[in-house]
Length: 143
Image (tube, rainbow, N blue to C red; front, side, top):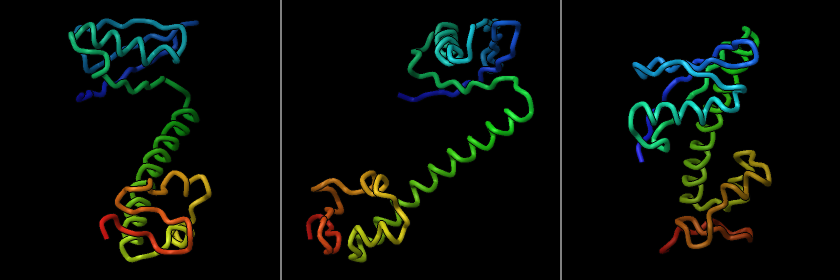
């Protein structure tokens, strides 16, 4: 299912948070007690207003916060994007090393993978690169 991302602008109003969604014309501001509720309530309000399934709505909660919080949020977002890019690059590198015949443990060491990351990236038996736990190279399926 295709999703559309909307921005929930959250402003503190006493003990409540007032939510506005600028992309949805005619959607009046509403309130939630905590930011934890902002995502689900915004998703429901947008879905109801536009007549679409809530599952097709993605919400980016943007609280009106002091500068240090905004800086931390930006840094965290950049870190998430960097982690996604690193994961993608790791998969490509492991695939290239497997095709060149490198054993998975050597490829993992070359990439500096931790034991947990090795488990995460290890190909499942029967996949394109069949993991051999011994010191032999990765075998491409069908070869």
